[in-house]
Image (cartoon, rainbow, N blue to C red):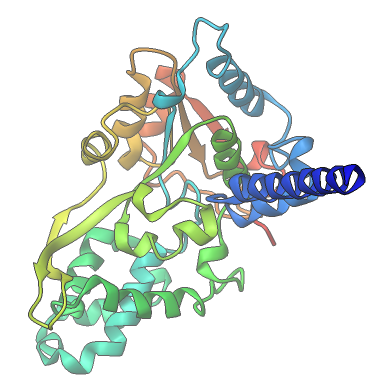
Length: 345
């Protein structure tokens, strides 16, 4: 009997350890990007979590800042409940050339449903948009394309609008890189997101892109839950006319989430200033300033596109924020010098 009892206790201990191991795997991998999950399982994160960043001032400043604010003995310690980081999307995490990918999707979607909108035939602005190449869409901002998307939506439910967006994201490819648009995320930025998350930061997307479009890929590609996506949005209404409750998009822009609207939506969703904010354009200036003016330690990061060989080189759209970043001492990250690798391919 004693031997049976010992055997049972031993078996229970093994099962308990296996269960705890499974739970640990689940806890660590849940809510992380595919890159982070793969790295965790292979043990890569036991080494350098920012392995795609070149050793130098940018990486050193990020690591030293994070170590400082998570150290309970430091005067700059930031409690877990205050550790928020906000990231712009286009141009900060995801390639935004030759045009914003959401604008390209809107054109493709509008083309697919134009037979349902005979009024477009006499609208020169819509016709120009429909007949535009990807390169032609460079000067079309998300706010303009969202107005056309609002018309194309035709008072549809958000759930019904998700399916064509998902189909496009699973098939549409970048002409230069021959990769799915949603896969053109910057590997160093995903590593930074996972590094911050591993140190107790809660990550939010805060972009000028439409929130419901970003929610189609934010979780699978970045490990960022849909509840942590802040973006531009259409007017929405509740409806039960179809026999079930639905949220229906209206043909009107509710908020265009750039410039001063970013701090406002951050305050509305989070209720606190972010400790870390990352952006790449003039439209991110106020968000970066909002974080930098925090009462306590903060880090504002500006991504500079200066790598024509591996991505694109341009200052257009960042002419104002670059000198502001230098004046305020923000961290300006050079894609050419600070990224050992840009994409996952």
